[in-house]
Image 1: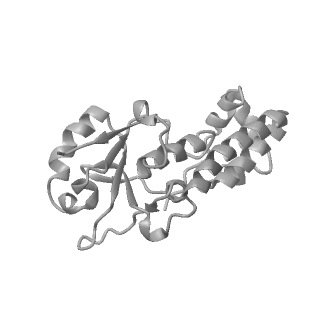
Image 2: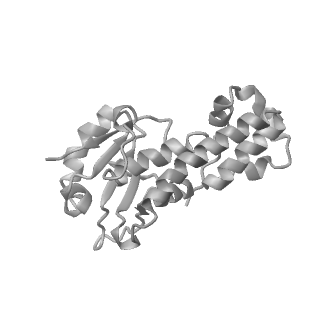
Image 3: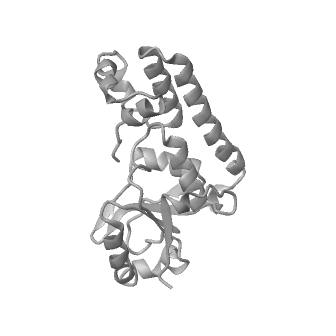
Amino acid sequence: MQKPALSLHSILEALGLDSACIPLLKETASYHRMIQSTTPEEVFQAIRSIGETLNLQPEADQLAEDLEERINIIIHKLKFIPEEHKPNVLCLHDVSPVAMAQNEYLSRLISIAGGIDYLNWDKDAFNPDILLLIADKPVSELLSELPNTLATGYWEKTHAVKNNNIYVVHDARYLRQPGALIADDIEILAEIINPQYFIFGRNEDVWMPFSLH
């Protein structure tokens, strides 16, 4: 499973800095470990390390605390949901042809947002509950292809298609890399996976439902 690199740009932007600071970060002893941060805890530590290196410790600490607080709200609200009640979520970049969007970062975030990362590609048992498309191609092109693709083959028999649990993330800033948008990413997933508990309104600017019928 792939491990996307930490988005230094997003963290620097959140701290009011630009990419000119990246060479300074590359000189630190912790750089290679830092850019491999995947979990929220690792991202928070990376933010604090960046703040220490760039003499912005108070700002970095506040950013990490704010992100942690937002994520903890979701964790606490979902902590009593049994595993057997959590939906399976399949993340793809495209369905024609199939292009996977699975990686360690997404898998961890799906778990925090109350879902289970779907990894079963056995055609006889293939049945994700939710299909999440993190669009790589123009959304208009993807939407024009989806009806025919999902109405054929093994797709049409899945819970995701039968129940219209199909969602398209069309903003390329989200669900790509760990970084300063990690709380946004988890909130987006939480309102898609558990809409009965969360409404963050990101369906207005980041994602959209797709209905076959």
